[in-house]
View 1: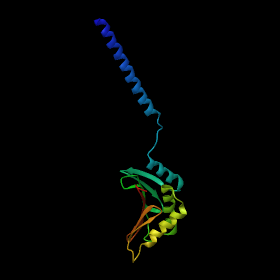
View 2 (view 1 turned 120 degrees about the horizontal axis):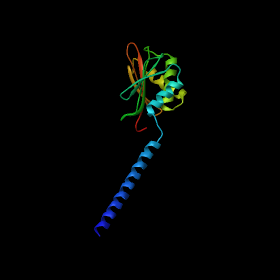
View 3 (view 1 turned 90 degrees about the horizontal axis):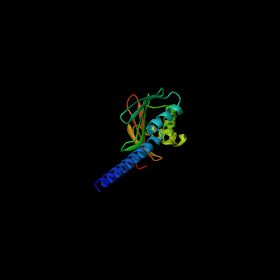
View 4 (view 1 turned 30 degrees about the vertical axis):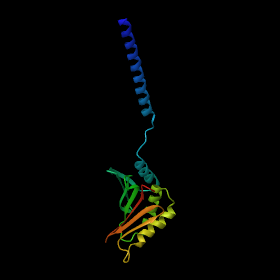
Length: 167
């Protein structure tokens, strides 16, 4: 009978190994079957590049993708973090931006936040026009579930548009 017990343990050991190998193979196949997917923030940056003529996608540092365009002094796309889902930051060359800058920012925000451009033109121009003697050089408004923060210095004006996590 001692030989019979050895055969049973050998058979059960082979059975366990085959189950383990089958499970490992199933897990491997499940992970390799997933399609290769780029980061969502990188996808948005590429949509901006395709949708706006002259826009260039720069380096990614931390959670920010730096962009460049002739109408903007500085431009960046903030990727999702604990505070917001996405953030678009654009700085103009002048203290009082012209209508083409407002249209450019509204077009970029329309791509990032998937809202109509004409509505965003109203929001961006409203935020930028509120800065002045009575309200100061740092204005925050809420428009269409977007947080808009406009600031200006002696040389330039900037706008940051973001959507909170809870929105």
